[in-house]
Image (cartoon, rainbow, N blue to C red; front, side, top):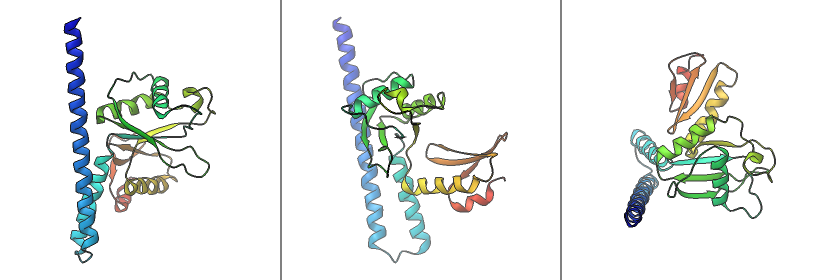
Length: 216
């Protein structure tokens, strides 16, 4: 028993150290983003090429900072149910067994008019984040009532969290391909891809100019 307890204590210490390292990495990324944004705002005379390169770097770092997060939409807040409990219920509905330390943080964003406030879940690793997304794909139709019987039967969606710039590009990409039902758009590790049904290759979309490369 004492050996098992010692092993558990060592595992807890290892997990705590890992979480601390992740927090430090996250803080460093935020500081670097702030530094680059400050440089851009302080030096408006940067040549267009340098300015564009800096903006691209800021965007890349901002997306990296979101790489362990998912956004859950369509899931209303049940009365007297905490965010932590909501995550447990969501995981259970997806057949996911959560472990202590899997989730680093979770919170709700302000709701859009008439909608449920999006739930942001930040995991300790991209691997855990990806495993949740993979489990959701096994259940394409997930209703809020499947998660909590007291909630209405609205559809719940689970996706990678994107920066505002990347999200705008995703919206534009979907609008561009909407008339072409044989084209599929998806996100993988913060990148947008488009593929024709039955094709083996896909087109990465990094800017609007890439729309011209989409095989219509």
